[in-house]
Amino acid sequence: MILKPARLSLAISFAVTTMIAAPAFAQNAATVNGKPIPAAKLDQMVKQVVAQGRATDTPALRDAIKKELIGREVLIQEADKQGVGGRADVKAAIDNARQSIIINAMLADYVKKNPIKDADIKAEYDRFKAQVGDKEYHARHILVPTEDEAKALITKLKGGAKFEDLAKANSKDGSAANGGDLDWASPANYVPEFSKAMVALQKGAITDTPVKTQYGFHVIKLEDVRQAKIPALDEVKQQVAESLQQRQLAQYRESLVKKAKIQ
Image (cartoon, rainbow, N blue to C red; front, side, top):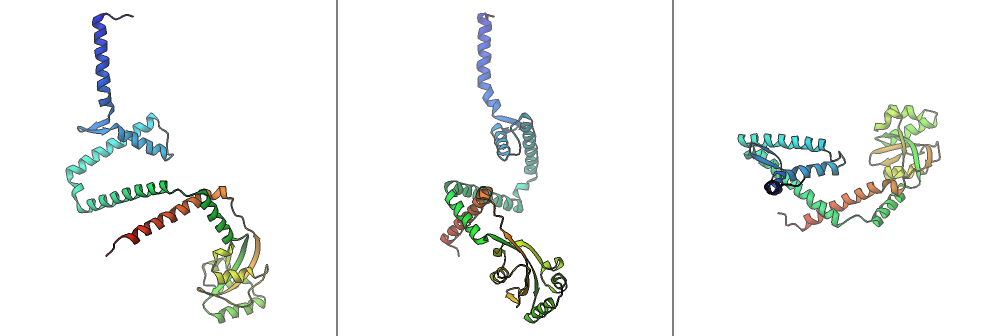
């Protein structure tokens, strides 16, 4: 259809008006008591939710977030009417929140500028493997306060008493209820004195003399030994990277504290 000059002029005028007015309308997601909620704010919240993997960008999601923003605006307007924002406790909470947001943003920038390298992850993994070792030990123990008590227990065990029964009746450790059972673990999980005595035992054997540690005196029985089940690097790479990152951030914080003039 060919428009007549008058209609053509009217159509062009409407199109131009729409082009000019549309951006202004699109700038706001809604208006509450005359106060606009910017569309950019809605977009930002949608992006955050999507980035966190909690949802996908859909009309339903946008509608839900829009309702949330409207609800917040209604509440903040009412809070302003009541003067809640001027209270000392609220101001302190706002200041703490402000500090946290700014600090977290700064640390996020630091992480981006100082990424954990694959070589560092591999080195940390290898260190962990060396520390853990290639074997796991299933042991039981009885913990008592004095050496004489431990020696008396060893004598009873040599006389045929059951280790589990003596552990339940005498051990001061939390494992007493389970007959002193410590389950499977790496020697690195225990204090050095305990580990050294444990790995020296043969399967089924009991320590001939009490083992002294910072916790007291132990009588140890080795139930069994097996090859350690250490996950492959690819399986734990993310956890190792996060651990190194936390350590890096802690060191960064400490370096800043050391440089600061604190009185």
